[in-house]
Amino acid sequence: MHSYIPIILMVSVGILLGSVFLLLHRFLGPHRPNPEKLSTYESGMPPVRSARERFSVKYYMVAVLFILFDIEVIFLYPWAVNFRTLGLFGYVEMVLFIVILLVGYLYILKKGALRWD
Amino acid sequence: MNLYDIIFYFFAVVTIASAAVVVFSRNIVYSAFSLLFTFFGVAGIYVLLNADFLAITQLLVYVGGILVLILFGVMLTTNVVSVEIKTGTMQTLPATIIVALLAGLLGGIVWTTDWFVGKRLSEVTSQTTSKEIGTALITTHVLPFEIASVILLVAIVGAAMMARRERSNTNI
Image (cartoon, chains in turn orange, cyan):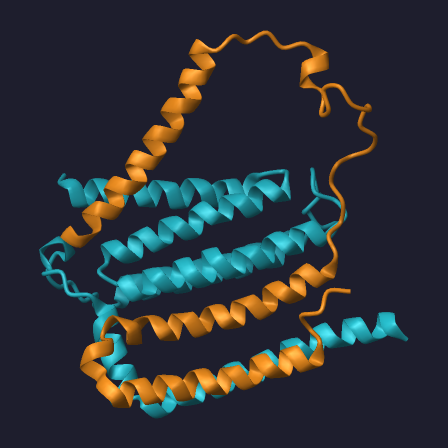
């Protein structure tokens, strides 16, 4: 459990620093809003409609592919932790693992699933 | 109440509070973002249970992957604010009976199971599980490990097919 103390420290210092700066800005800086300042483009054209648009389904497809390679990374991680003790056999097995998935990657490329338009 | 308990309650509160926001928020973008903290809290509890590999998996797959999918799913929808989740039909009597049966079943399981209570987890000497999982995966279970890559390959091919079909419709 002691090995997690640096992570806890980093996260808490990060939260602390971020919130302290936000609060300092709130208390020290001048705060005089007017409708002109609060508009989306202060000196531009008045905004029309909602800014929210429906996203293209292409993003979703890329995200699906991303998750699959994300799972590949999950398999890499326990191997990388004891890379030295597993030796050449582990290395060859992992290369085999990656080559099989590389076939899938080449398939995606050839299918054109990563092309945007 | 030592440091371990304090950290556990912190993660438990983060998980439950953000899960409540997921359920009760009227804006589904808030719900999706709140899910981030739920997943994060669960990952923290995994760390506290000495299951560091599960925690990493939780962070990488759920926070990094599934949540992105859910957010894109939200962005694909038309309505975001104040979506009416209630359905029109209310089957009160069957719902009550089924929920009561389910609660009785779960309660019965909790009551009759002989729970294994080992050492206090705070007293377990820190031994990372990912090291042992890695050794087991490459040595004794190397065939399932390689089969997993083939299964992933099948999933990749399927996803590529889906992405491709959507494209070919626009081309024709």
